[in-house]
Length: 280
Image (cartoon, rainbow, N blue to C red; front, side, top):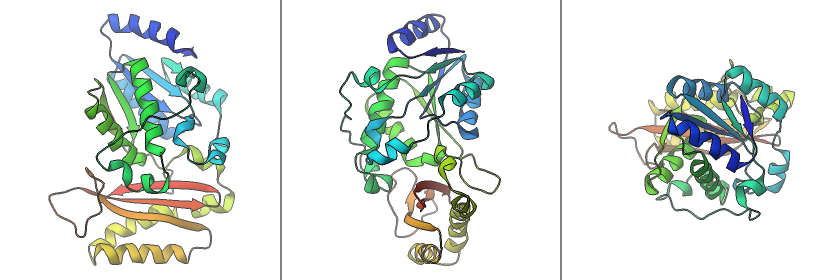
Protein backbone atom coordinates (compact mmCIF):
# COMPACT_ATOMS: atom_id res chain seq x y z
CA UNK A 1 0.00 0.00 0.00
CA UNK A 2 1.39 3.38 -1.02
CA UNK A 3 0.64 6.51 1.03
CA UNK A 4 0.86 9.99 -0.54
CA UNK A 5 0.62 13.41 1.06
CA UNK A 6 1.48 15.49 -2.03
CA UNK A 7 -0.83 15.65 -5.04
CA UNK A 8 2.10 15.98 -7.46
CA UNK A 9 3.59 12.65 -6.33
CA UNK A 10 0.16 10.98 -6.43
CA UNK A 11 -0.52 12.25 -9.97
CA UNK A 12 2.84 10.91 -11.17
CA UNK A 13 2.04 7.50 -9.74
CA UNK A 14 -1.47 7.46 -11.22
CA UNK A 15 -0.31 8.63 -14.66
CA UNK A 16 1.88 5.52 -14.89
CA UNK A 17 -1.12 3.36 -13.94
CA UNK A 18 -3.34 5.06 -16.54
CA UNK A 19 -0.74 4.46 -19.25
CA UNK A 20 -1.37 0.76 -18.66
CA UNK A 21 -5.11 1.33 -19.28
CA UNK A 22 -5.96 0.20 -15.77
CA UNK A 23 -9.25 1.17 -14.13
CA UNK A 24 -9.00 3.26 -10.99
CA UNK A 25 -11.63 3.14 -8.24
CA UNK A 26 -11.83 6.01 -5.77
CA UNK A 27 -13.37 6.10 -2.28
CA UNK A 28 -13.30 9.56 -0.64
CA UNK A 29 -13.46 9.49 3.19
CA UNK A 30 -12.93 11.77 6.16
CA UNK A 31 -11.27 8.97 8.12
CA UNK A 32 -12.47 7.32 11.35
CA UNK A 33 -13.08 4.33 9.10
CA UNK A 34 -15.65 1.62 9.81
CA UNK A 35 -17.12 -1.40 8.04
CA UNK A 36 -19.30 0.82 5.88
CA UNK A 37 -16.17 2.39 4.36
CA UNK A 38 -14.59 -1.05 4.01
CA UNK A 39 -17.63 -2.27 2.06
CA UNK A 40 -17.10 0.59 -0.44
CA UNK A 41 -13.44 -0.37 -0.76
CA UNK A 42 -14.36 -4.02 -1.27
CA UNK A 43 -16.79 -3.07 -4.05
CA UNK A 44 -14.13 -0.90 -5.68
CA UNK A 45 -11.54 -3.68 -5.54
CA UNK A 46 -13.92 -6.07 -7.33
CA UNK A 47 -14.51 -3.66 -10.20
CA UNK A 48 -11.17 -1.86 -10.70
CA UNK A 49 -7.49 -2.69 -11.05
CA UNK A 50 -6.42 -0.07 -8.48
CA UNK A 51 -8.32 1.40 -5.51
CA UNK A 52 -7.46 4.85 -4.13
CA UNK A 53 -8.81 6.04 -0.77
CA UNK A 54 -8.54 9.62 0.46
CA UNK A 55 -8.56 10.59 4.13
CA UNK A 56 -9.28 14.28 4.51
CA UNK A 57 -11.49 16.13 6.98
CA UNK A 58 -12.71 18.85 4.65
CA UNK A 59 -13.07 22.19 6.48
CA UNK A 60 -15.27 23.89 3.87
CA UNK A 61 -18.22 21.51 4.40
CA UNK A 62 -18.54 22.30 8.12
CA UNK A 63 -20.82 25.21 9.00
CA UNK A 64 -19.97 24.68 12.67
CA UNK A 65 -16.29 25.14 13.63
CA UNK A 66 -16.77 23.18 16.87
CA UNK A 67 -18.12 20.23 14.86
CA UNK A 68 -15.00 20.38 12.70
CA UNK A 69 -12.73 20.39 15.76
CA UNK A 70 -14.57 17.47 17.33
CA UNK A 71 -14.66 15.31 14.20
CA UNK A 72 -12.96 11.99 15.10
CA UNK A 73 -9.42 11.46 13.81
CA UNK A 74 -7.92 7.95 13.93
CA UNK A 75 -5.27 8.01 11.20
CA UNK A 76 -3.01 5.20 12.44
CA UNK A 77 -5.97 2.87 12.91
CA UNK A 78 -7.37 3.90 9.51
CA UNK A 79 -4.12 3.09 7.71
CA UNK A 80 -3.96 -0.30 9.43
CA UNK A 81 -7.53 -1.07 8.33
CA UNK A 82 -6.82 0.02 4.76
CA UNK A 83 -3.73 -2.15 4.54
CA UNK A 84 -5.70 -5.17 5.78
CA UNK A 85 -8.49 -4.37 3.30
CA UNK A 86 -6.03 -4.45 0.40
CA UNK A 87 -6.23 -0.77 -0.48
CA UNK A 88 -3.60 0.13 -3.09
CA UNK A 89 -3.12 3.87 -2.59
CA UNK A 90 -4.01 6.27 0.24
CA UNK A 91 -4.04 10.05 -0.19
CA UNK A 92 -3.80 12.06 3.06
CA UNK A 93 -3.26 15.72 2.06
CA UNK A 94 -3.34 18.77 4.30
CA UNK A 95 -5.85 21.59 3.75
CA UNK A 96 -2.99 23.77 2.45
CA UNK A 97 -2.04 21.10 -0.09
CA UNK A 98 -5.59 20.82 -1.39
CA UNK A 99 -6.71 24.45 -1.20
CA UNK A 100 -3.44 26.25 -1.99
CA UNK A 101 -3.68 28.31 1.23
CA UNK A 102 -7.17 29.60 0.26
CA UNK A 103 -9.55 27.40 2.21
CA UNK A 104 -12.82 28.51 0.61
CA UNK A 105 -15.58 26.66 -1.19
CA UNK A 106 -16.78 27.28 -4.73
CA UNK A 107 -20.49 28.14 -5.11
CA UNK A 108 -22.54 25.59 -7.02
CA UNK A 109 -26.09 25.17 -8.25
CA UNK A 110 -27.58 21.69 -8.35
CA UNK A 111 -31.08 22.46 -9.61
CA UNK A 112 -32.48 22.71 -6.09
CA UNK A 113 -31.05 19.41 -4.80
CA UNK A 114 -28.86 21.41 -2.41
CA UNK A 115 -31.79 23.33 -0.89
CA UNK A 116 -33.51 20.35 0.70
CA UNK A 117 -32.90 18.61 4.04
CA UNK A 118 -29.20 18.89 4.90
CA UNK A 119 -28.99 22.01 2.73
CA UNK A 120 -31.71 23.68 4.82
CA UNK A 121 -30.03 22.90 8.11
CA UNK A 122 -26.33 23.18 7.14
CA UNK A 123 -25.82 26.29 5.04
CA UNK A 124 -23.00 25.99 2.51
CA UNK A 125 -22.43 22.31 3.33
CA UNK A 126 -22.88 21.02 -0.21
CA UNK A 127 -20.74 23.77 -1.73
CA UNK A 128 -17.95 22.42 0.48
CA UNK A 129 -18.67 18.81 -0.44
CA UNK A 130 -18.79 19.50 -4.18
CA UNK A 131 -15.65 21.64 -4.02
CA UNK A 132 -13.53 18.92 -2.41
CA UNK A 133 -14.92 16.09 -4.53
CA UNK A 134 -14.27 18.04 -7.73
CA UNK A 135 -10.70 18.74 -6.56
CA UNK A 136 -10.14 15.05 -5.85
CA UNK A 137 -11.58 14.06 -9.24
CA UNK A 138 -9.21 16.52 -10.94
CA UNK A 139 -6.21 15.07 -9.10
CA UNK A 140 -7.07 11.37 -9.32
CA UNK A 141 -9.16 11.12 -12.53
CA UNK A 142 -10.82 7.89 -11.34
CA UNK A 143 -12.78 5.56 -13.58
CA UNK A 144 -15.35 4.90 -10.84
CA UNK A 145 -16.06 6.56 -7.50
CA UNK A 146 -18.03 5.06 -4.62
CA UNK A 147 -20.37 6.79 -2.15
CA UNK A 148 -22.59 5.34 0.57
CA UNK A 149 -26.35 5.79 0.37
CA UNK A 150 -26.45 6.86 4.03
CA UNK A 151 -25.59 10.28 2.63
CA UNK A 152 -28.16 9.90 -0.15
CA UNK A 153 -28.59 13.63 -0.76
CA UNK A 154 -24.82 13.95 -1.12
CA UNK A 155 -24.82 11.04 -3.58
CA UNK A 156 -27.45 12.74 -5.76
CA UNK A 157 -25.53 16.03 -5.66
CA UNK A 158 -22.26 14.36 -6.70
CA UNK A 159 -24.08 12.72 -9.62
CA UNK A 160 -25.39 16.15 -10.63
CA UNK A 161 -21.90 17.68 -10.23
CA UNK A 162 -20.46 15.09 -12.63
CA UNK A 163 -23.31 15.54 -15.10
CA UNK A 164 -23.24 19.35 -15.16
CA UNK A 165 -19.45 19.57 -15.44
CA UNK A 166 -18.97 16.64 -17.84
CA UNK A 167 -16.53 14.94 -15.47
CA UNK A 168 -15.57 11.52 -16.91
CA UNK A 169 -16.19 9.41 -13.81
CA UNK A 170 -18.92 6.89 -13.01
CA UNK A 171 -20.60 7.52 -9.64
CA UNK A 172 -21.72 4.36 -7.83
CA UNK A 173 -23.99 4.41 -4.79
CA UNK A 174 -23.62 1.59 -2.27
CA UNK A 175 -26.22 0.43 0.30
CA UNK A 176 -26.31 1.73 3.87
CA UNK A 177 -24.17 -0.48 6.11
CA UNK A 178 -25.76 -1.04 9.53
CA UNK A 179 -24.88 -2.33 12.97
CA UNK A 180 -26.75 -5.44 14.14
CA UNK A 181 -29.27 -3.24 15.95
CA UNK A 182 -29.98 -1.20 12.82
CA UNK A 183 -27.96 1.95 13.53
CA UNK A 184 -26.41 3.24 10.31
CA UNK A 185 -22.62 3.04 10.50
CA UNK A 186 -21.02 6.47 10.79
CA UNK A 187 -17.67 7.88 11.86
CA UNK A 188 -19.61 9.95 14.39
CA UNK A 189 -20.92 6.86 16.21
CA UNK A 190 -17.71 6.51 18.24
CA UNK A 191 -18.56 9.85 19.86
CA UNK A 192 -21.84 8.52 21.30
CA UNK A 193 -22.08 8.04 25.06
CA UNK A 194 -23.48 4.76 26.42
CA UNK A 195 -27.02 6.12 26.86
CA UNK A 196 -27.04 7.74 23.42
CA UNK A 197 -25.65 4.62 21.73
CA UNK A 198 -28.31 2.47 23.38
CA UNK A 199 -31.04 4.88 22.25
CA UNK A 200 -29.75 5.42 18.68
CA UNK A 201 -31.39 2.34 17.02
CA UNK A 202 -34.72 4.13 17.59
CA UNK A 203 -33.80 6.22 14.54
CA UNK A 204 -33.90 3.25 12.16
CA UNK A 205 -36.98 1.84 13.91
CA UNK A 206 -38.75 5.15 13.24
CA UNK A 207 -37.83 5.02 9.55
CA UNK A 208 -39.25 1.50 9.27
CA UNK A 209 -42.40 2.68 11.04
CA UNK A 210 -42.88 5.24 8.25
CA UNK A 211 -43.08 2.45 5.67
CA UNK A 212 -45.77 0.77 7.76
CA UNK A 213 -47.77 3.92 8.50
CA UNK A 214 -47.82 5.10 4.87
CA UNK A 215 -49.91 2.07 3.94
CA UNK A 216 -52.50 3.17 6.51
CA UNK A 217 -52.59 6.97 6.36
CA UNK A 218 -51.36 10.16 4.62
CA UNK A 219 -47.78 11.50 4.39
CA UNK A 220 -48.64 14.42 6.71
CA UNK A 221 -50.19 12.19 9.38
CA UNK A 222 -47.30 9.73 9.13
CA UNK A 223 -44.71 12.45 9.72
CA UNK A 224 -46.74 13.92 12.60
CA UNK A 225 -46.81 10.47 14.19
CA UNK A 226 -43.01 10.14 14.00
CA UNK A 227 -42.52 13.69 15.32
CA UNK A 228 -44.78 12.82 18.24
CA UNK A 229 -42.71 9.72 19.03
CA UNK A 230 -39.54 11.80 19.22
CA UNK A 231 -41.18 14.48 21.36
CA UNK A 232 -41.68 11.77 23.99
CA UNK A 233 -38.14 10.39 23.67
CA UNK A 234 -35.95 11.22 26.69
CA UNK A 235 -32.61 11.25 24.85
CA UNK A 236 -33.00 11.76 21.10
CA UNK A 237 -33.97 15.14 19.62
CA UNK A 238 -35.44 15.18 16.13
CA UNK A 239 -33.99 17.84 13.81
CA UNK A 240 -35.97 16.90 10.71
CA UNK A 241 -37.96 14.12 9.10
CA UNK A 242 -38.81 14.29 5.38
CA UNK A 243 -40.27 12.09 2.70
CA UNK A 244 -38.83 13.00 -0.70
CA UNK A 245 -38.75 11.80 -4.28
CA UNK A 246 -35.36 10.23 -4.98
CA UNK A 247 -34.40 12.10 -8.17
CA UNK A 248 -35.48 15.64 -7.25
CA UNK A 249 -35.50 15.36 -3.41
CA UNK A 250 -38.75 17.33 -3.50
CA UNK A 251 -41.35 16.55 -0.84
CA UNK A 252 -44.59 15.25 -2.39
CA UNK A 253 -48.15 15.82 -1.22
CA UNK A 254 -48.98 12.22 -2.08
CA UNK A 255 -47.04 9.22 -3.36
CA UNK A 256 -47.18 8.18 -7.02
CA UNK A 257 -46.54 4.57 -8.00
CA UNK A 258 -44.37 5.65 -10.96
CA UNK A 259 -41.77 7.35 -8.70
CA UNK A 260 -39.28 6.22 -6.06
CA UNK A 261 -39.28 7.80 -2.60
CA UNK A 262 -37.13 7.84 0.52
CA UNK A 263 -37.61 8.88 4.11
CA UNK A 264 -34.81 11.07 5.47
CA UNK A 265 -34.07 11.85 9.11
CA UNK A 266 -31.61 13.86 11.21
CA UNK A 267 -31.41 13.42 14.96
CA UNK A 268 -29.25 14.84 17.74
CA UNK A 269 -28.14 12.21 20.25
CA UNK A 270 -26.61 14.41 22.92
CA UNK A 271 -23.93 16.40 21.10
CA UNK A 272 -23.72 13.94 18.19
CA UNK A 273 -25.74 14.56 15.05
CA UNK A 274 -26.87 11.44 13.17
CA UNK A 275 -28.56 11.08 9.78
CA UNK A 276 -30.19 8.11 8.08
CA UNK A 277 -32.64 7.25 5.31
CA UNK A 278 -34.49 4.30 3.85
CA UNK A 279 -36.13 3.53 0.53
CA UNK A 280 -39.93 3.47 0.72
